Length: 76
Image (cartoon, rainbow, N blue to C red; front, top):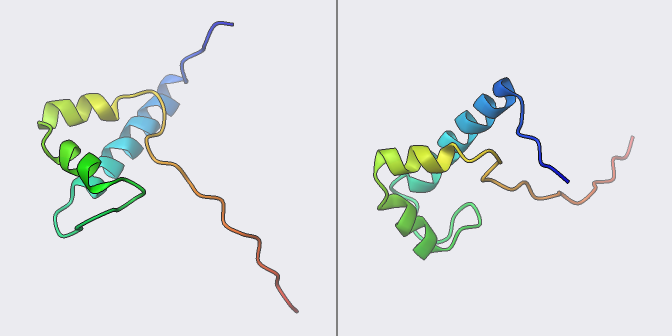
């Protein structure tokens, strides 16, 4: 089965989202585990050059995962 790349506008949005995510991950003042990443992984990402981070952000899939929140009961 052949894979299909996302449409160009979707790919651009994924790239922008990934870039913002990497900026958050690499931001100073966030010691330890953050965004589900171990400190060693975050430190490695922080050591990448801007061009290398841009190449990672250009990955055609989301780098961030979204946790499923438990259902909440709403009482009226």
